[in-house]
Image (tube, rainbow, N blue to C red; front, side):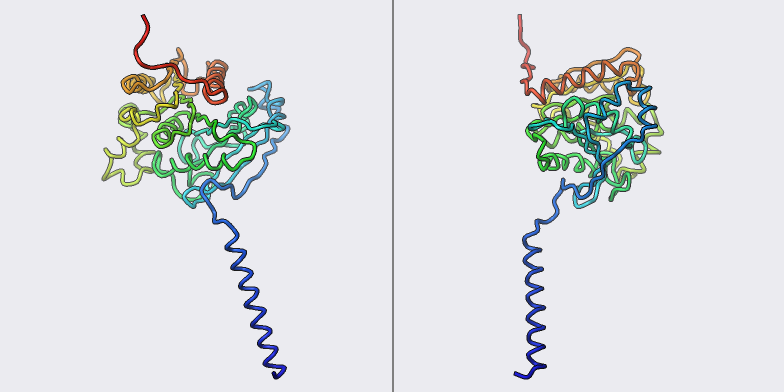
Length: 330
């Protein structure tokens, strides 16, 4: 064989082998999946900020010493969605978990490093792995939120995310949602039985009532975020009003409803009407209405925190069964 022909043969053979190796490596690499973390960054709060936070939470320094805070990017419906992962350090053994559903919309109410340290951190320091989504389209994530539409998947895909964490016990998952995050919690509980218990504070349960109470919610939020609002308004209201479909909620998930009696953002009547719907559906729940409490229960923060953690400890961490909700007794 002529040297030039031999050279071409060897060259083509080498290229073929390289292509075959690349194909083999591609075949061995699992495809991206929903819930997969594709990026994470550890958060280190500045000393000046920690000193400032000590005015709000005197124990913040010791709390931060017990946890790690990470900004994460994970996949949901193929989109790169932003969130937070907060976990205890040096725990040893598998830990119970909490999915935290933030309130607000777009950048209003979005989680920040400070909010993650304060709110998610208090739960994590108590012994839980806490994960939260910013919802698609927010904080630099891909896609567009729909205020209770497709981004409910962003919440549900946190379940396989927790399953991928060696430290997490995915058989013990709780959920915690405030305001719009309460609505997200209800929507998630209509689609999964994986949540052992949930805490809902200042929860939005009736879009029609919220529009009557605050017309700006329709013009500034719902009409701007909910797809086809102008043509499918009533269907969108019904789909995002759990007071109308309480019977669809997973009945093995007991609910703790917390609401301030002086809440102007979400009327306490929404909690009362939801409680009535839950009673009708014979769904296990407890309602605590705080006298004079605002939307964030600012005046009752210590009691709210204690009640929430007790609820999670009882039904998520310890797996206590819920008492019968059927009429009984003397």
